[in-house]
Image (cartoon, rainbow, N blue to C red):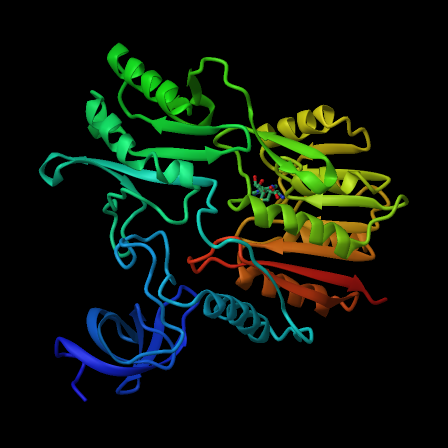
Length: 438
Ligand SMILES: C[S@@+](CC[C@H](N)C(=O)[O-])C[C@H]1O[C@@H](n2cnc3c(N)ncnc32)[C@H](O)[C@@H]1O
């Protein structure tokens, strides 16, 4: 075996890290190897050496995993958008299950008998994205795409297999559009939001647009029937350019007969199909009835609140972002739902809270990556519902908060589900159901 100091070293890969890199050992030291899969023996080129670990990238594969597949995307390995396209789709689902079970085992939370899986079409699913833009004359003009894997460069994408197809199809013409603009080197990003009724692009610009720029953007919007917005500073400066009064974007929750409206910079779950099925699963897990009062924490636009309100007696949705609360209220009104109210509250606040007031029998929590520790402490101390459904985008904080719930002595973990919201990436969405035991 060669040593770490040489250009390439050989190792057997034992595991996949939570971010999708192969994990091996060379002379006792852990190596995280991009592009390597468990069971493989690979030759590795070193990227970085740290005291306790090294990072590298596969140089050549000596023994190949039976789970290895040819990535569909030609940018795979360079583009930072996807991490595990080289792993078969069933292999990706097993990997995500393992990330969740490792997190639970690490937090000393007993796992249920099995972890359920929710998956849908793993391609062309992404309805929300932030695309980076860079104008580099020497590199042939404008680059539009996700950041590269190990640096802040932009991958110039002509196609993207995970973006909704109508948006992927726009990538080459977006490049041409940016090259026409006077602000082409002052335009760092384009936000993409795809609704059931329309697609919107939000162009962030650091210098004022000229009349010719505005005209070029409007012509692009009309030609591609895509709503165009501009953004000069924070989210409040997002302004419609074409059409000047666009219809709000929307997505359906068909089973509930709901249409949820949103603006192009609002939080919506990235994968529409998985979202719809997840809402169905959460409401069915909670087995809602006409006596139930439901508390939906981190409720956003009312995704879970409005669906729950179709069955429950009443629902309170709590959310930190005032503009989302305002839209949740509008969504309730548009869908003729009267048994739901919303409050704007900081759910990480450790002071006195009023959202615990009520007779809540069921609670839904769907926090950001940092989890819901403070909010759940209040739920356990003051609300003690029959059941808590927890939707999480970070297995580590889910496992930590699950341990708190179980250690309280009032809850047991009943169901655990991995929902593949982000196929081909290492991101893991999980749902857990806790039932009160005492
Ligand atoms: C994962 S999203 C879930 C949104 C919603 N449940 C849905 O399904 O669309 C997390 C939500 O938590 C909100 N949030 C983040 N920090 C918060 C805080 N400190 N207090 C209350 N809400 C917060 C975000 O604005 C976002 O709407």
